[in-house]
Image (cartoon, rainbow over all chains, first blue to last red; front, side, top):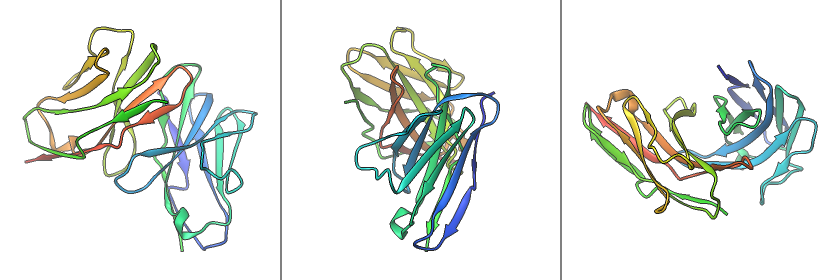
Length: 115
Length: 113
């Protein structure tokens, strides 16, 4: 199989604080990981693409200083939302690919609520 | 840039009947992949079916099949013998070898008992 986990599944934080979301590939080495944001009943919006050991590539309009992505190993990528505000409240989903195959494996998502 | 269009925001179907979800895309690439994903209320993205653009034969996975028309850039999903568990949001997605996926806006499908 190809299982991707995310932690936490749900986090509530206060405005101005930072929160870290982990994305792990449990049974394979992920060459590339993607981070998406999804609002209710809307599509997935790609935020950034990360490859192990290199800087993430951010999509246009995504603030890289606000959404820090670290892909430190072939099985772990983290997304840190810095100085979170209520408008950052959303559902964040990561996905991973193994080798150079075309299939993406999705994590279960993390619901972030900023109060 | 690639675009994916799903023109049906919401659809419903009676249990055991057949429903077709539409998807069109635009690209200048020749080699690419197309996917249908299901997102149930749990919000876990689940791969339903995939199609390689170089394959002329339409992909089939049990009750799910696609009608892939490369020249028309159309990729519809047919669900046969609909089940209550098929109720979900369905996303059509396009991906090139470069790796980034483009998703449509989704179709919310409700299967009625």
